[in-house]
Length: 275
Figure 1 (cartoon, rainbow, N blue to C red):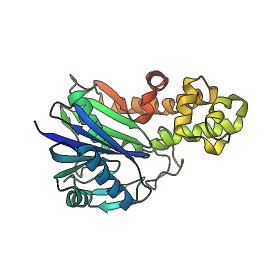
Figure 2: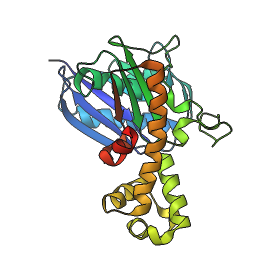
Figure 3: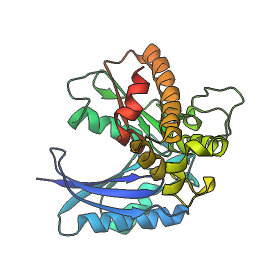
C-alpha cells in the first residue's frame, strides 16, 4: 500500500499527515508557520520529515494558499505570503528527495472531501475554506475545475464591497476581508473596544486588552457565551452566507462544504450561514 504525505500551509501552523490510499491519516506532525517565505520552505521540509519518520513515503502533496500554476509546481502569487513565482515543487523536492505536487489548498480540501468526506455521493460540489483567509474549490461533473491557468475558484478575492477594506492581494473589498479568521479577530476587537462590558470573558482569556485578543480567545469565549464573541461569529457567518448564496446562483451545486479552522466551531458558524 502506497503512502503519501499531505502538507497544509496555514496562517499559524504547517500540518503534515501520512495518508494511505483509502484516505486514512496514519500520522501527523505540525510546526509553527514562520514569518518569512524561505522559512516556510524550511518548515515544510521539517514537517515532512517529522510525519514521515518510520514510514515508507512515495510522494508529497502541498496545499498552498495562492495561485498555483497549471503544472502544479509554482506558486504564482500568494496574497498572505511573500511568494511571487515561487518554484515550491523544485525547492521541496531537492530537500526531501521525493516527488512533490503543489496544489491550491482549497482545491485540495475540496477534492479530499469529495473523495473521502462530506462530498461523497455528490457530482457537483462547491467548497470554501474559512481560515486565516478564504479559499474555494469547484467540483463540477465529478471533476476538479482549475481553470485555464490553474487559478480558478479564488472566491476569497471576489470583490463584495466596492472600495472596501484593502486586501493582501492588492485589491479592495475582497470577500475574505469580511469572512475569514482575520475578519473575525477584527470584528471582536471592534466590538470589545466599543462595549468592553460585554467582552469581559473574552478580555480575560487574553492579556486583558483589546489588542491582545486572538482567534483562539474568541472561540473559547463564544463557547462560554460571551456576547461579543458570539456576535463576531455571527457577523462573519452573515458575510459567508451571503457569498455562498451568490455562488449558488453561479454554480447550482448539490452541496456546499465549509471547512477551515473557523468552521471548527460547528453550528455557531454554520447555523447563521444556513439562515
